Image (cartoon, rainbow, N blue to C red; front, side):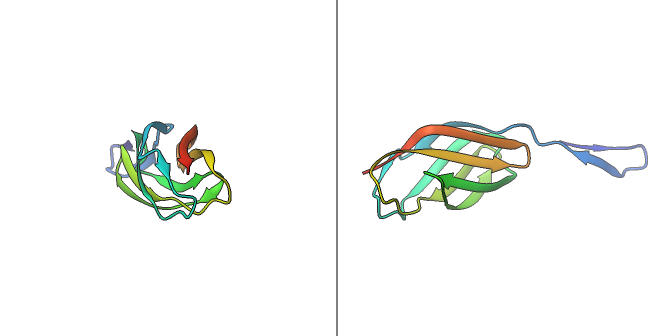
Length: 99
């Protein structure tokens, strides 16, 4: 949200805290390279995405959707998906499973 004063000048921009409601698909190879769709709220100002603690390449589609590419993982099993925006950081514990 952007607020303006009576002179038409922007005074601040507010980005609410992000949320994650789904990660699709939720399974992928330890080799990485799998595209995933992260759906939530307040994702439009995403600054970084990590999966299992490793940085993931990502692109913002809209304020409610981002796409990321899974990085390689040395281990199988669940991995946390973390999104950092200008409004805060949210983690979906074990939202992606490396197989």
